[in-house]
Image (tube, rainbow, N blue to C red; front, side, top):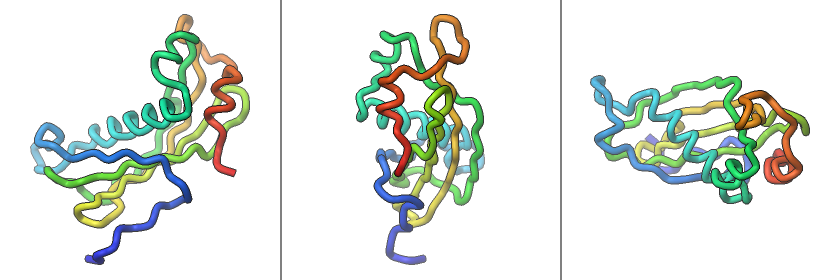
Length: 146
């Protein structure tokens, strides 16, 4: 195994650090598949917060981004105690309803890419549960990579 960490798939990721705790481990002895999805959500919210769209702000506007489609590739197992970096990039925004994030999970302890995913989100009216055009604030905050 190389002593170097794998490269990020794209430049300038927004990343968070997590640790695989005992509560994340399943009966097979590795991080349960559903935990990765929770890490993606944590990363997406942290990124949204960093660009000025906290959960509280979304609730105030009664607008939010909901998962429409998720494609995930589990590439290598993570184990209790592993130090994990979870990164995301906004790669598309149609300027109306949809935005897409790409995610990459690097297991820093084992020095390997553990997971990749792409998630298509749709802007929702939180009162009605129906799709709605993104407010200008969302369009500004969720600008894709150039």
